[in-house]
Amino acid sequence: MQVPGSIHAAMLTPMKDDAAIAPEAIAPLVDFVLARGVDGVYVGGSTGEAMLMSRDERAEVLRATADVAKGRASLIAHVGAASTHDAVALARVASAAGYDAVAAVPPFYYSFSFAEIRDYYGEIADAAGLPLMIYNIPSLTGVDFNLDQLVELLQDDRIGGIKFTDKDVFQFTRLRRATPSKKHFFGTDEMFISAVAAGADGGIGSTYNLIGDVYVGIQEALDDGDLDRARDLQAKSHSLIEILFQTGVIEGLKYAMTRVGVPVGPCRRPFSPAPREALAKLDAWLDGQMKRAA
Image (cartoon, rainbow, N blue to C red; front, side, top):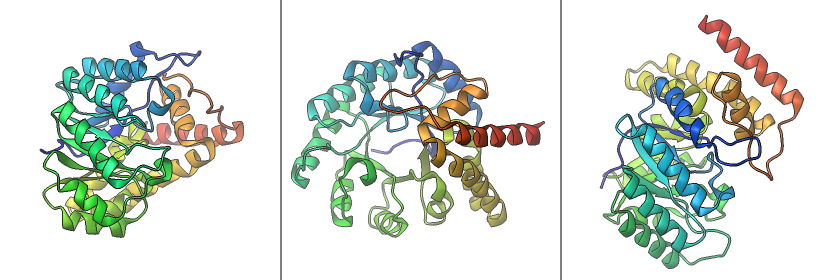
């Protein structure tokens, strides 16, 4: 079972000023993101603040995004949760809504055994009836799979691939070599050029909301053997990410999207507003991009 597409934006979740979900703002966001040339959207993940939402809210976002994006792009629903019960319920929502694949972080907070995590993934895959992608992001989940564990998970016929969000390109390369029939997506935006050079099948990232064309361009440039262009595009990504590390990645991206005419509202607490001095740097970066595009 294969996960479709190559370059996917890890979607932000639009919210109202009171931090309630703003489903009416999803269509303009999807339009903007797809206009950057990405293959698809990855909905309900870390960038989407999913772990700050109830299960019903997450289901609402999955359905609302499918309503406006289905048939226009490949759709991946992130359904991972601390509870197998919740993850399975969301997997069924994604399947009914017409998603092409589902993804899931491992269950977190408690120290589950590898056998328990493997069973969790099996139940999600069975409930969805769709290709399942392992979402490996140890910095946030606290679950740090070793290579043998990742290989074992990907050898399951129900598993279509992995979203690998870590800086260990060595492990990523070894995993790709050990499981060549699966799709290997990279999720650390600032290292995308390295991952593509190592054989990544694509990328899924936060900054793709704003500059998805940059990552499409990096992949195309490396496919064409144009290393200088790929480096220039990755440098553009770096110039943005350096500022987002000061604003907070999600906070800064939401501010930037609203400023370019795609209102997505604030982040949900306990996120706090970005520092003003960092936002001033982001304003200058956005103004510079607009001048170059003029």
